[in-house]
Length: 503
Image (tube, rainbow, N blue to C red; front, side, top):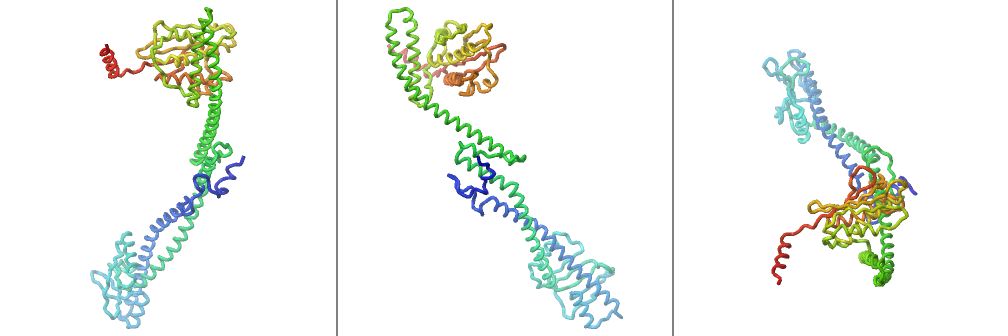
């Protein structure tokens, strides 16, 4: 027996019968979808890191320019008469990376450094009360314009006193620095996302994908030959949801194997029954001819038992014919009529087999009580129940108990109930658990449990049932419930009208 661990999806590369390959194409596999989703989710998370990062880098870059411009303004204030040569002024502007520097103090705005050429700023940014959302929008505004603008930036002076410091500068250096920073973040983000995606994929692959593949492979492999017990999956012992799925799959596969074996057994049994019924019909036909001749013998004992023998043979022949007709023991619909119960019960009790043990039989059915039923099928129901009770009493080891079978009946409205009671050993728990199941509900060794199963099937065909009645004391009591047919008023009125109109 090969373990499924060595015949799992890693070792099954060929196609499975009926359902194609056990593995889908790579790009449509669960692993590929999982990897794509992992990369997408990581990039989605990186995007939320990228936007605040470039916004913070831009604000820091601008504040550095403001600090350098402030230093340049201090150099101007330290000069005699705050007068600088053109070369020194240009050198300070170049070192600070700005084109104009202005500071507002005491309500007056003072132009500290500036170029000779007049400037026209295209955009003004105020960093004094900057919100993070606005900072992100400003960063993307810088990236989209490509550094072709002259901008002004306003902020509080970092070190000197004043209401604000304002400078004008070319946006190109800022654009280049922002692009380089974005590419750096993107490079590290892609590397990080790929690493996280691979780690996530590996973790989920080994914890989820491989066990799921093992389950799917086990199902495909079992479907190829569901009668082979070697193909039943062996649970890995996991305690999570997949472990539960493995154990439930193993349980269902074992039940399927058991049911298929039972089905094959029943199929073989049905074929054997058909063969037996065919031969038995021929034997019973010959016995019927002999019984017909016996009925002509002028002997009181023969005349008493010959009709009962003929009736029993007729029932047996009809049952054999029905079995051969359908290929199985399919019961025909009941031919219902008014049946007097006391004579029927008397006939059933007289049909019980003789034994070396005395069993007292009591017919407590009231005279005149009738049921709306098929006489032959009701006879079979009661015979199966009384024969089971008789066999249970004969098999008792106690010799002190007076063995009794008592059949009673009563009518409650449109329902007739027949009780078959005995004072035998009762039913063991195993028989009670599978009471009306064929081949499992027998209370004695060697029994098939077919008697109760057949009795219940026939009773339910009448719209009734056979149930085990609860009671105190030894023995068992079965109730056969037979309801009357429902009368359709329109049909009944038409019948009565037809009878009254006929001469």
